[in-house]
Amino acid sequence: MAHQYDVIIIGSGTAGLSLALRLAAYARVAVISKTELASGASYWAQGGIAAVLDTQDSFTEHCQDTLIAGADLCDPNAVEPIVKLAPEMIQWLDTLGVNFCKNDTQTQYDLTREGGHGKRRIVHAHDATGKAIQTTLIEHVLAHPQITIFPHTIAIDLIVANKHQPEHHFVQGVYLQNCQTEQITALLAPCTVLATGGASRVYLYNTNPDVASGDGIAMAWRAGCSVANMEFNQFHPTCLYHPQAKTLLLTEAIRGEGGFLLTPDGQRFMQKFHPQAELAPRDIVARAIDHEMKRLGVPCLYLDISHKSKQFIQERFPTLYEQCLQYGIDMTKERLPIVPAAHYTCGGIQTDIYGQTDIPRLFAIGETAYTGLHGANRMASNSLLECLSSAYLAHGKIQTVIQSPMPNQPVAHWDESQTCDPDERVVITHNWEELRRFMWDYVGIVRTTKRLQRAYHRVQLLKKEISEYYWRYRVTPDLLELRNLVDVAQLIIISALLRKESRGLHYNTDYPHSSAAFLKPTVLNPLVIRTLTEFV
Image (cartoon, rainbow, N blue to C red; front, top):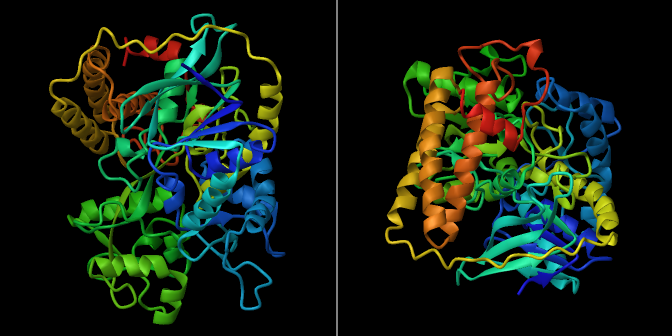
């Protein structure tokens, strides 16, 4: 039996929870979380939120810095309203109880600076801003009687009425699977929102939590939505290089506070690549590190802030200081070994500024959406800002949508009568490892057309094998994530093949320069992808 709500929000990060709180004033809201509410990427965000709060700063400068970082692909119509909402979003969080760092008199926010920003405009809660925000949002969400949480639940697919009649189609809800019992149910609502985060787990080395498997992008694609700019995958320049650390990101604020990037012999090198040196945009820093590692034949480079006082480091980076100590590294005394790692998905489901997708009654916000804010590269600390601002902009539009009656369409029960239990789940593990390995090797920081074509043919074979497995056996959470990742990988590869230039996060050595012919987003829809498969 299907359960009915006013709004279904799939995802429990900053975008999803802040939207849930805004909608709960007049709607019954269901929030779907794959694990616990604090498991997403938002919780682990270290840096902060970019906002113009200093009299020496301006919205114009914040917009301009964003446009420059985005390599001329940002949409100014998205950048300006999101940037201008930033102070209001900070005030809203402050009112909820987020404990941002302030100056000695506690009268103004302690603003720091990060790569790409011309001014100090990053509001932060030490080096654990995401945790401070998520903890506060979770507290309010759990206390709200209009919000129902579905933890340990994964979305399988959107329920689309009249799917093969685009002029009449709309989203009715979603099929869900409980990750613990593997029971499948349907949830219906006049409005469904995808806030599922990014897809960096498609890469072997990444900074993302386990839940970042591109679920929203893949489900929207299968439902018939357009996606845009999937070739732009941000690789964070500084992930701790340690056999036990796995995905420990070293915040960009270390460089913002004066940290140096060094070769193994202690030489700075970023001045060779950009006038802003360590404070250059992330795509440039990541490529510079990759270049130096390959030139020198070394497994890692180094990030050093030990020239700052021990007191400063411990007060500014308390969480990171303790985490590094767990791996035997004292950042007040020694250099931090670093490598780049996949970090942020700059493309996603194409939406307008209010989060509306191609399909009526379906919205997307946060990292899973492409609004035009980031262009070809995301500027540091604009991501949490986008989560908050997009939720704010979407909630008014959603209020109008849920007030209009949804056509009464029958919903098919989930039928697994023709399937059986999988006999060898090791197939999923092998395909998962193969996918992430060839994405890292062929579709990583530096690309070539030959590598991309090789990756395309590999992903086609995997996609066919996974599809056969999906329809033959009963679904499991691992299979669902793998199915989503292979769909996202295909979109990334084809988008990268179509962009025959180098711009921002997409660098192809066969086309090393940018071209005016590609001053537009790469937009794909299901019809285009079917055509492309015959020619790539």
